[in-house]
Image (cartoon, rainbow over the protein chains, first blue to last red):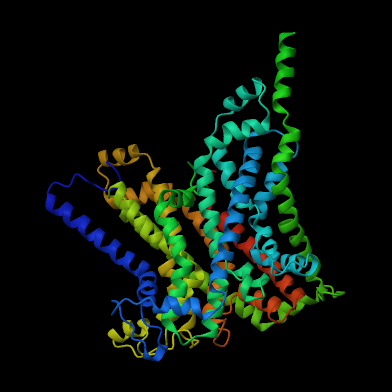
Length: 286
Length: 300
């Protein structure tokens, strides 16, 4: 029957029970999305100083002045968005390709040292980011002298262990017979990968693309460390500037926050299935 | 003869050496350069007074300094308090929501999943900006309006050491459960219906089903969420950095923030590296303990 008893005799009590549950869920949902709602409606306010601002739950009127204010605030407002797109797109493409290649190799190919190498990769996921953060900064900024370049923003995330792990999990379910049959027919590994594995792995590649793009787009910390001029900053770093330079302008700040979140919301609502699927992959034993 | 032939064929089929290494080459280079090398370097830097041009070897001084630094212990304590207040509660809340979503149709489930996951999609910086204004110390700030409704006086949420930590905790309670809900739901949906049917025949109540079927089945998922949640929480940095800067009076200085400040505000790279290694040790110890005491009867 399932966890819940849906055989309740009277229609009334079933209705009452579901009604009660729905109410609880809706209340909690309202609390969850309230900050986002508040961010969006406040961004339509006039760009007046915070003292003159009224905090209302419903928008008194809709004006795009604050958005104009945001883009006029800095000569580089558009650059922040452009940089974010370039960096997130490059990181996404390279992760999808290289993580799929490596994931396939670890899942289905046989070569010496595979087990140990994979164990090392997996083990490294336990290391907190703080451990690598200082040496990585020294490597990129002091040794390679790459600060304030796209290379510095992109390189360290070119392919992540988590993505390799995700692909490997997924590919374990592809039957070996397909690959062996192709080999017997004389198909080389790159061809097998291109013509058989990639078409079969579209789902995991989509999940990978979305999660990677989201992480890269929302990343604040690394771009904040390696950029030092406004024109190289990403939108997340740009937002921080904005807040510290101009704490008193509330609505334009919300406009900036909305602008940084909207591309992700659009992606999320159009590709919801992959987002939600992706979260559970690797966490739940199928 | 025939046997030898199959053996040879099999050997040929099994050896992918060349292509195998080629396929993992980029991943391996990236890993060596951006993870393995920095980890090894962290150990080296932690033993040095790091200067870009010529560092000096100082032995264990950075570690000794950290241990005798009151702020390090305070940051560790703050991180522990934050973890204890957020991780178990967020897991419980996610479990509750996942259970409550269960009786509805797939479409309704998806809508709720999407709504609860939305804060995870928004960037941390934009959420921090919004929450800063929710916690505005003026009477007109939303948090103050809400508590004012219950007759509580105006609070300086992020600016007073009495409420700053709680404000960060509240923010976490209301925005970081989306992932856990989805993971719990996936686990709940994978429980075979026959268990419930058997329980129904035995006349089990809802709570009994919960106690004897759901909770044992979800134990691996809970352990996963607990371990990853604690690991994540111990590295918390961004919200404390953006919202309070660790203040007031270091009431919200987390270890992650302390390490960041030591490295990139004071340029004490050696001390930061030493503290990051101590943090890694603490995380490893806690994860080990969790597996030892909670993971006894879990098979993977």
